[in-house]
Image (cartoon, rainbow, N blue to C red; front, top):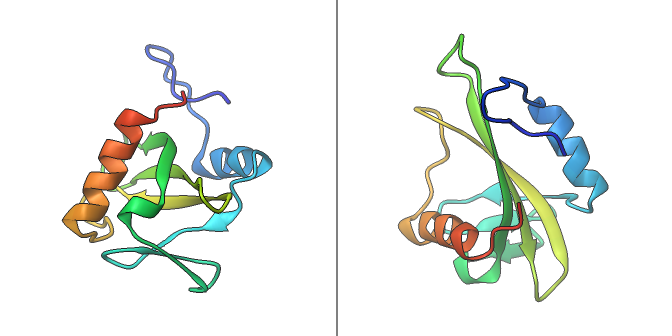
Length: 114
């Protein structure tokens, strides 16, 4: 996948990146609910120890600092679930509990795939 390349200024759009991840099997929608993610219309609930972050892609619009987002490719190794979570970056981001934030940050640092 072509992502932001240092010095080139080239970046895929959020929708292009989502399409690429969906082709890799990341089809579930991870909905933030403060201390967990709801998946499959709430049929599955994932707490911090249930998931890992496989990849992170950050999108920035240099002309509009409020137009920033982060795409997380997340998997649940015990169940084979793979999906995406999109968070706004800046004042409009989702409010998550400290354990959720810690898991997202620490899971990525211990399980980088890119």
